[in-house]
Image (tube, rainbow, N blue to C red; front, side, top):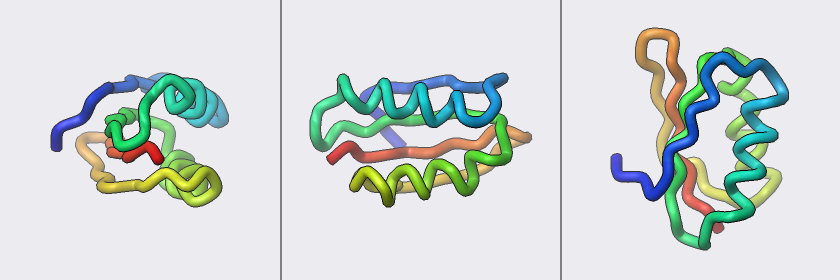
Length: 75
Protein backbone atom coordinates (compact mmCIF):
# COMPACT_ATOMS: atom_id res chain seq x y z
CA UNK A 1 0.00 0.00 0.00
CA UNK A 2 1.30 3.45 -0.89
CA UNK A 3 2.00 5.87 1.93
CA UNK A 4 2.97 9.53 1.94
CA UNK A 5 5.24 9.08 4.96
CA UNK A 6 6.74 6.21 6.92
CA UNK A 7 7.37 6.21 10.66
CA UNK A 8 9.59 3.47 12.04
CA UNK A 9 8.93 3.17 15.78
CA UNK A 10 10.55 -0.25 16.24
CA UNK A 11 12.34 -0.74 19.53
CA UNK A 12 10.08 1.72 21.33
CA UNK A 13 7.77 0.57 24.09
CA UNK A 14 4.37 1.94 25.07
CA UNK A 15 3.53 4.80 25.06
CA UNK A 16 6.31 6.05 22.76
CA UNK A 17 4.97 4.67 19.44
CA UNK A 18 1.69 6.54 20.05
CA UNK A 19 3.55 9.68 21.15
CA UNK A 20 5.58 9.63 17.93
CA UNK A 21 2.47 8.86 15.87
CA UNK A 22 0.61 11.81 17.38
CA UNK A 23 3.56 14.14 16.74
CA UNK A 24 3.84 13.03 13.11
CA UNK A 25 0.08 13.36 12.58
CA UNK A 26 0.28 17.05 13.54
CA UNK A 27 2.53 17.85 10.57
CA UNK A 28 0.67 15.78 8.00
CA UNK A 29 -2.10 17.07 5.77
CA UNK A 30 -5.65 15.78 5.65
CA UNK A 31 -5.90 12.77 3.34
CA UNK A 32 -2.22 11.82 3.61
CA UNK A 33 -1.39 8.25 4.59
CA UNK A 34 1.18 7.31 7.24
CA UNK A 35 2.78 3.87 7.32
CA UNK A 36 3.66 3.11 10.95
CA UNK A 37 6.00 0.21 11.75
CA UNK A 38 6.28 -1.02 15.33
CA UNK A 39 7.31 -4.13 17.22
CA UNK A 40 5.48 -3.41 20.49
CA UNK A 41 2.56 -5.84 20.82
CA UNK A 42 0.57 -3.20 22.70
CA UNK A 43 0.21 -1.30 19.43
CA UNK A 44 -2.36 -3.87 18.26
CA UNK A 45 -4.82 -2.21 20.65
CA UNK A 46 -3.25 1.23 21.02
CA UNK A 47 -3.16 2.28 17.35
CA UNK A 48 -6.83 1.49 16.57
CA UNK A 49 -7.85 3.18 19.83
CA UNK A 50 -5.81 6.28 18.93
CA UNK A 51 -7.42 6.39 15.48
CA UNK A 52 -10.92 6.15 16.98
CA UNK A 53 -10.13 8.84 19.53
CA UNK A 54 -8.60 11.27 17.00
CA UNK A 55 -10.89 10.65 14.02
CA UNK A 56 -8.10 9.37 11.78
CA UNK A 57 -8.81 6.27 9.68
CA UNK A 58 -6.97 3.00 10.13
CA UNK A 59 -6.96 1.78 6.52
CA UNK A 60 -5.03 -1.44 6.96
CA UNK A 61 -2.92 -3.35 9.46
CA UNK A 62 -0.73 -6.41 9.09
CA UNK A 63 1.93 -8.41 10.90
CA UNK A 64 5.19 -9.58 9.36
CA UNK A 65 7.80 -11.47 11.37
CA UNK A 66 7.18 -9.63 14.63
CA UNK A 67 6.71 -6.27 12.92
CA UNK A 68 3.33 -4.63 13.03
CA UNK A 69 2.37 -2.39 10.11
CA UNK A 70 -0.41 0.20 10.21
CA UNK A 71 -1.57 2.47 7.40
CA UNK A 72 -3.41 5.49 8.77
CA UNK A 73 -5.23 8.12 6.71
CA UNK A 74 -5.13 11.53 8.33
CA UNK A 75 -8.35 13.47 8.69
